[in-house]
Length: 270
Image (cartoon, rainbow, N blue to C red; front, side):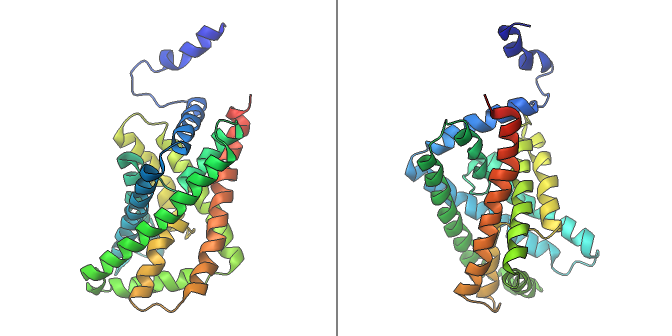
């Protein structure tokens, strides 16, 4: 088989025009996308990062409302909440935004030396802090809207925040690792799809799994923890840092190492 034949294989295999991209094609799309993301102008990157924080916060707010007063039992309630939370990543992927945890996949382009270390760190730093700003802004707006006074939403928000702030370092770290493995796999699978419906379905199952299992997502916590504190949860800046530091480190290990690193070893190395 000639090199030209190999290059034609993807198009020959997609006879209908709707077939999913192969894993090798996904890896290339992830790398190419990573190069583009790393080169975004600062103003555009910051605005897209702010949007991502708001989008994930909307998913978290939806989750909070859905699990409030639910009598389906622990597992089904968490599953239903996970489906609701998936709204956030659907908005990020389909609507377009720059999410710190998803951008851990840029490591594939970095490992192939298509993105510099400085460009990678710039993207992560800007997206992390603008995601945080977006999540906190949304928590403030939801608080001002009076939504927390509807039913038992306030009590649910307090319980969620206090449970997160009570985690020890190891528990928060490993929940962060497992969470971002699933989030990055959701992004990976979404790039296999050629339609909005396909992308949405690809996102819902991994995201529902991490929510149902109680894993920790740093960007979601930028909304969930402030929201709970605004309505009476016990905690302060030290408690917030004690959650976000291990969760963020875990997210990086799970996304950059557990997904991007593994797939680079399989598909990316020359």
